Image (cartoon, rainbow, N blue to C red):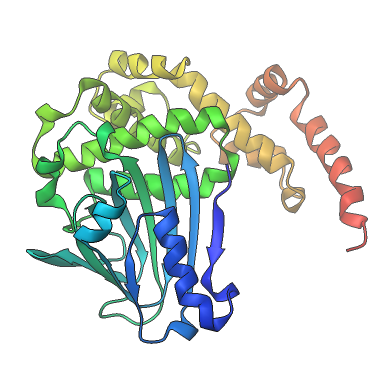
Length: 333
């Protein structure tokens, strides 16, 4: 799945800001937008579907926007959105509350509730947002219970906030690699993650179904494993201890993925090794060095595991991959 992109600066100056407003209203929700310099406006919107959810990537210069009761009556997609400020800052609020959300932090807003916003408030340059949009009907908390959280700055520096922020960034990076089946499953995980974030700040754990807790713990575990693949000591015991869960419960979690913890670790390590061996820029790096980078301390162990999965030895795979790539590299531009 690849994110489709719209760039306002590709439109002729007289129609530029109107085109941006129309695109945002169609792809996100109807909004009333204003700027003092419409002809020089810079804005980019990327959008990708993730099953029932959607990932939106905004980058824009300072302007003002409002979601009014009249616009809500005209069209309401009934979605709840969590937005991560990747860079810059975002002023956002409603009639009873206003907050300034800086880079690394999060904010929730609801298409059924009025709000206003101003990217770049108090800071020059472009503001970039990464937003996860999910149908509100899929969340375990009611719209009324969510209201106290709307347009409030939520920290993304630790705990569930940090997990949410890092997950959004990872999903954006990996979007082109997702299959249709991947996006359907990932949609469920992302809905659970947003639910957990909301319930954490509402102190409403009782409102979150047990299955949601399990999915969020599993998401945290998978993120931990991905970040520690190079550690040869990475094993189920280490993973369970890092997340304060039993090894038995850890194995139970991975039943949701139809695999085991050890198999998951081995698969990721082999995939990364295979990618490195196929990379011409790393052709000078000895295979045993590549193996150690991804947690294999013994080359014989790597050779057996690699052959079992890919049907060839690491050395033969690298030679074959380089031969395939070399003619393409010699073709004229």
